[in-house]
Length: 252
Image (cartoon, rainbow, N blue to C red; front, side, top):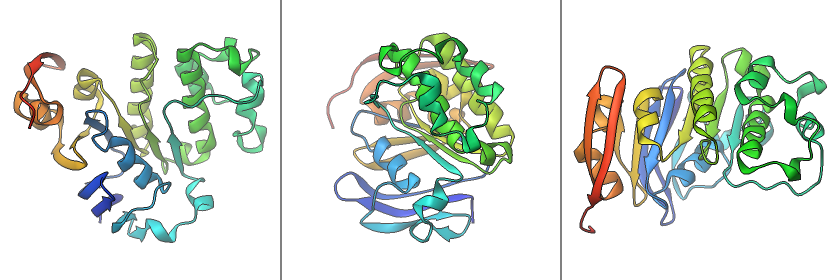
């Protein structure tokens, strides 16, 4: 059995008999329109949302049999749209998630460029700065598992609010973490980034997983039109993709 398996997962009217598998050390990008089921699928995999039927397996173990406290040692979940409630310095905020209060890993400091933000109030950050802190926070929580290549890292819209440079920095980091053996899933609306940085792409439409595969299989006019209800022009040259949405398709 694969590292992660979903078997006929259904959640009310949000997911309909989703079945898929992920091998260890894979980067999965989840594509689809707003409301297509991306966030619901990630919440289910994270163990944070109950499902009506089906099973989720981690390395042959049923997700339902793994406690949240055990999950928290190797699985992180980054939720979109988090807003801080307390007026804390960034360093103090991050300290709540650092095991034994160890220093922030240098790799994360560099990837998210947060050193100059540590003494700022978290409520005074821009949207993009807060997003970088939240991504860093989610990874710090499971850093020992990441270092050993045993982490499951789940991100809902991690590129939201990030400028282009920090989008690329984060995506490069995902590849580096996967090379260590960690498994990553993230939802995105950036099709061109998914074409370049994903090992596996899932496409959702109306709660159904309508397509899955590598970029060569998924980043095609036909699959993208089914996913987004838009007509696309796609050109690939080596590791470079040009993906243009031309016009909305007729509703189906």
